Image 1 (tube, rainbow over the protein chains, first blue to last red):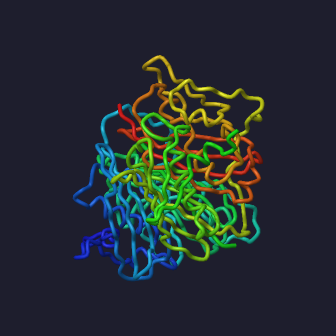
Image 2: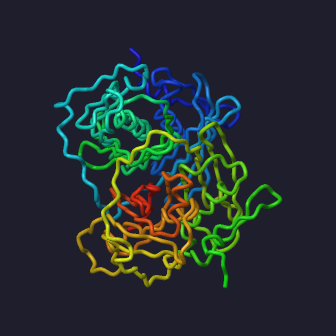
Image 3: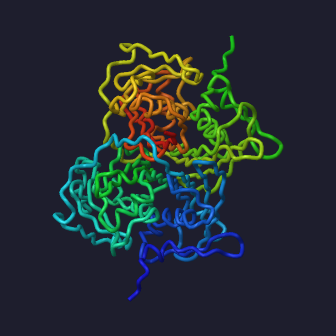
Length: 271
Length: 271
């Protein structure tokens, strides 16, 4: 039995003699024309959290997807731009061949006891064990690497054409498949594991892809660890689809009702 | 009479012989320990939109604030990372002396006619002329560069200590002061022109500063231009304050009820 989780295989990086990190795309997280963007985000975050210079824990991650990655090896360049007493700023570039496939920035922060307040509330949902896991009969393999238990906003893949737009909001329980204890790397991946809102609102598949993704980590390392393998409650929504681009906002709530991560992305689409 | 708007002065860049762009901080947009972050964001976006290589118009902007800028000159390095048929990816670095003060990424996109749908709704608010402009008696000069007309969530600067937390949401009309026809540069600046949620929820001033800001531009260039000098309806909120960092989400609605921009930021705070 192979005891290494597919996400750990997919995000593995090894240092090269050239100061770069070397990785390879993973079939287990393949999408349609390239790897699942969440695994690219997780790989770039892993380069930072595994670096001995790391200060604190991740606070913000932005990944810009410049071009689809082909199946095979890639290299990551990691630059520590500036570190202070409380924050550390990193820039990353992912190359494949001569081309830049993605750029990213990561801000890490030293978490200290301060005044604290959660002004937003977790959605009221039934516990995950009361909901059936949704299976998707689609070619994208990454979808099999997550369990989705929808509370509301279940996407419909084959609707009648020309229906009025559906609601953009989904609420669902999400977890790695197979189970894996949560860490910042998997939290980065799962922040991109929502079915793109276009499918749900419009009900048709058109060419589309994330061009920029930002995730904010609200959880301390201790809160992330305490989550273990319990499902996260995810919320996704979109405000506007217009002229070839739409936004998508997300929240990821822990099983104790605390917000672990939130963020947004902008998605290109055709037609 | 000086006909150049303070925002155009503050964001002006001139090419140097070294391939870099040269700018200088502006007293008109000074904050407390450095320039208003929105003007830094606007300056970095301006470097891209004024570049002859520009493809389309801005879609996403992320700025990471690595250190406070001192009053005086700075340099901007601009790299076109990759351009395709629909998107163009830029990376920027802002240096002052030997140190990196900010990094940024900008994604531009070619806007094409597509299926469109606004799934979110503009807040129902009275027209701006029915609301008094709020004045703030604070040392930060940038606040005088905007007109704020609050509908709800007006910040209170001098509350009684140890009050229960207030609501985090504000809704307000915002415009440049003096008036300036909207463009992507001013839209980037105004996306950071919300009073930080900490002040409003907690009612006390503690050391704080934005560490990462992301703005998505939903509007086409034509929609931005059509807005002219009319006020934007802004919405700001926060989900969680914890262990020295909090998020802040924003929306900027045009006077015709269409969403022009949305985004988020993460803010460091002490105590």
